[in-house]
Image (tube, rainbow, N blue to C red):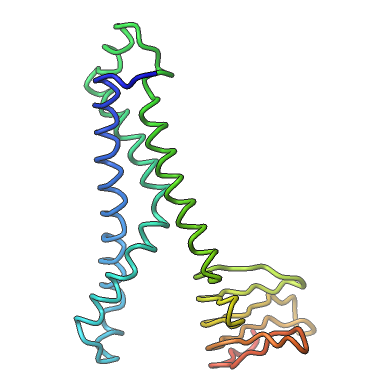
Length: 198
């Protein structure tokens, strides 16, 4: 199967929208986050260059997270534009099936998925995970900013358990870090500020 001029046109439209979404949406999210947290940054007396550098280095992770949405936007808007300008009707009138018409979109989506999978594999081979939530036994929920499996430690840990009443209260603990002890096979946390039970 060879790509035709129409395939190249659709693929070019798809790639343009995909790149605009993958790069534009994270910047939009950063602008909103910066507007919300600017007072906190100013109170902490952070340099504008340090804030800009931190957001710049957070871009790859944000782009990686936005890839599925970028694929969706690119697919919907590229095919939608062709439909709005009756290009789909013209393609079908020339004898091309809809299934054959969307092949370039499928190729683009597969390449984007491959990039996402490579990014996920790269993160896992580093032995670290970032910003995840894990539900454990007995109703405990762990929210972790960073887990380093090699060093066996966690940073920015929140432990929460939903209670049912005075005999089984709701508990919430924030910890700066946690370390895994091989001898006891348990995690020990350094609490930042325990929150009172509700």
